Length: 213
Ligand code: GLN
Image 1 (cartoon, rainbow, N blue to C red):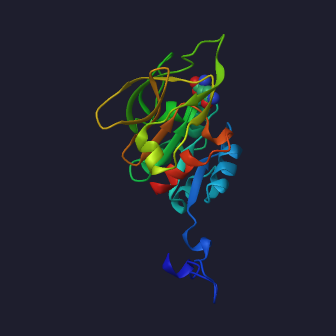
Image 2 (image 1 turned 120 degrees about the horizontal axis):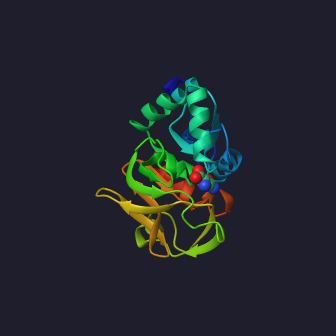
Image 3 (image 1 turned 30 degrees about the vertical axis):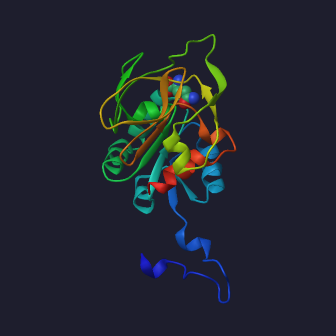
């Protein structure tokens, strides 16, 4: 709303008032590591909104589905009457899913099969790294395009009982791989990571999402 915008630039200042362009980004906050996403959004220069009620979806420019337990998040979204609203939000606004959030966004989920929003045309397998080596920190060499759109350099990736993207269909762009599997992808306005960019200090992945809003 133009009337509620902060006018740019303090009188005599050299740079525009940063509040004028601060983006409000929702983080689904029913379960999982939503607080870490909130902190990461602040580091990337956005204002987090911890979404627990449908009405909050009307006040945000984009939405993050965090890591946690996708099955539990599904149950809680149904219980809170949020499932259909989040699905509708994703049909017109950008959504960024990490780990469990990535599972919720996929078109097809296996191990076991479960319902999902189908916002990105990928097939994903839950807990696909197995129990013995289910968590790790890896150094990724992201695609040139990712580095051009953000900043150059390797990307530290924390995987926690992560899924593996087994298949990407046309229209999906792979922005980083680990061990030959896509781990950061985008399709149109949506972004998906099977790792946890909110747990490292590098703000590039969240900044990339903010660019899409
Ligand atoms: N294993 C979880 C699931 O299947 C995802 C783990 C995570 O988000 N760190 O939902």
